[in-house]
Length: 298
Length: 292
Image (cartoon, rainbow over all chains, first blue to last red; front, side, top):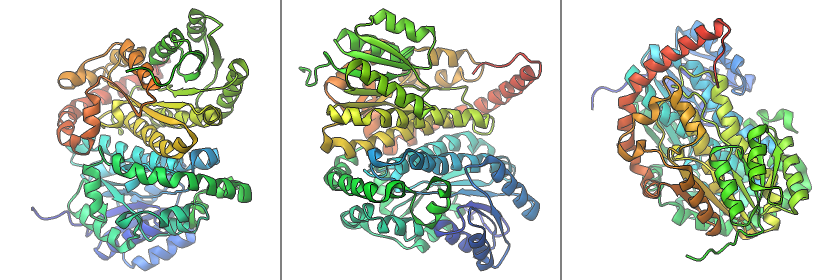
């Protein structure tokens, strides 16, 4: 294999950098000598991550549901670092429950952030990335491949983000730009801990069989993303069995639907009780990041 | 195969019913004895389809799928008129001008997601309590574009892949309530949407650049046949043409083949859309406007 794409001296813009996967990747890329532009909703958290990065790092508070704010963040990054080589569209939220028990505003917010936010992030950075023949990494999820119950907004948003990235890949290869997609199972982040703490959803998660219910450390995503960017990979996966799931995705429902169908009745009843008790709060995006992105909904 | 689920007397709520696949399905369903609630943006075409079917079996409801209040009102009105909803077909969709991400107007990109993905969700959500009450069937019209993600159509592919995943998740949620969920996967169908796109200077090449059967167009009646059989069999997969079923099984490795055509066509598409965008900007400056 020819010498890898060295991130040292490159500039990487990362959305959703205040927490979880985004913060981990920022620290790891910074340690490899990259300059990192940290974009997110939570200013104080972003500053804290920027300080941890040590090297060239700057925080830009911006909401991926707002194109103007993203443009300002991109302009700020260019001013500070001279350009953008790599964009990692990572910001994402999850939550909801069965379609019939989910607050419509919460459902639509997940699509707004996870799909339209990814598009806006990539679109805003694309001219820069093309100029530098860099790369794009869209953080989708295993949920783009396996579409289980209780998370329709999440699976729809992630399948959409993956398709967007796939189309884009064919469009920009001739311009010297590569596009990767991140497919991650359950990672130990605020988002997944928020899902586990959810009175109705947590139980379902705990009942998933074998490796599909396992939680993987966020450092594993850091490893995979560093490798993915260095090799300009199409698939960035954690854990590695996700790769097999992608290849088999056309027949996978024969297996995975069983688990979903088995869990659905109890999940449905649990969400119904939760909505009766907590109202809109029950289907609000989970975790601190989810709450930050849905302050206006409750 | 004998129909398992008889359409006679059923109430079908159908968006995008004024033309194309929606209008075809409306006529065919009515022929089978179903009563159809026709939903679209309004206008003469919608009224014409309703009139053609006859007021005993069809009623037109004006609603924009980007507006959940309008959809909820249409669902309520359909229930008042016909007594309930057995089947919902979330069909309304737009293609737009398409274009490589870097040349496409962001408002146009977002509009495709609004209509094709969020519109599908809002349609299904508005009808779901009624469909559950009658242990009915939900059909989400996605596309072959949910499976093959080519160049110059990122918004369309993203919206259709999202709609498919939504339907898949929903399917496991409502089976225990007696509701089945199907997804429609259609290749190029002879509808206004497809012929309009082919009149555009750059978008016209999207189809003809494809190899072999992938470039072929299919009559809208084939979709009518498939949708009738799909509802009667309460099927998970509804597709036209039939070979799409093979692609669905092979989708995990399909890109190894399908990317080649996309990568080959991309540079030329990119140049054509760049020229098209420049001339559209020129036309807009002169005040002549552009079609959508």
